Length: 169
Picture 1 (cartoon, rainbow, N blue to C red):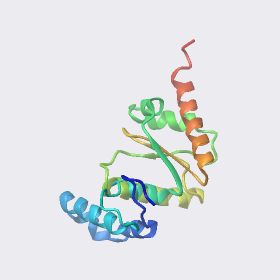
Picture 2 (cartoon, rainbow, N blue to C red):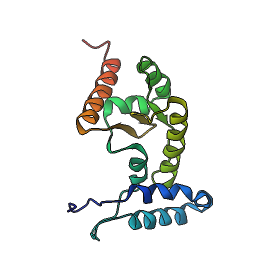
Picture 3 (cartoon, rainbow, N blue to C red):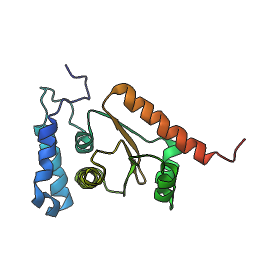
Picture 4 (cartoon, rainbow, N blue to C red):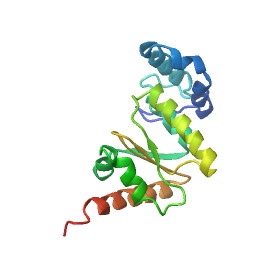
């Protein structure tokens, strides 16, 4: 039973959207309208009060537990000129570094960019990223458990906060 505003979706149906290569060539208005219709078609519940978020594609690509926030301490890096360099430096000791997602408009453009970059990341590291920094937008963390995703969220925010305020007593 889904809450009002939430939709139960089929992840495989959402991922099938990216198999439609000609979709990239459509004009933006038609492409986004197509996306909304495909997202609605992916719903597995009988609710008609809401539609899935245009960011559902991004969540479907990443995994079971995904948190997407706009934490100020992370946004300071995501919006900075040298943000990617600073994030790379901040997480340099990580076996699997955060994935930087260059800015893209929400909807198909963002979903396609995440889909493509995650596939490249998997080819390089043999695993999906746990941390994604979306340029000029926010933070996404992913885990196999609810506890793990919350712990990872705290870790990223604390690291960014410590780096930002290192000179403040």
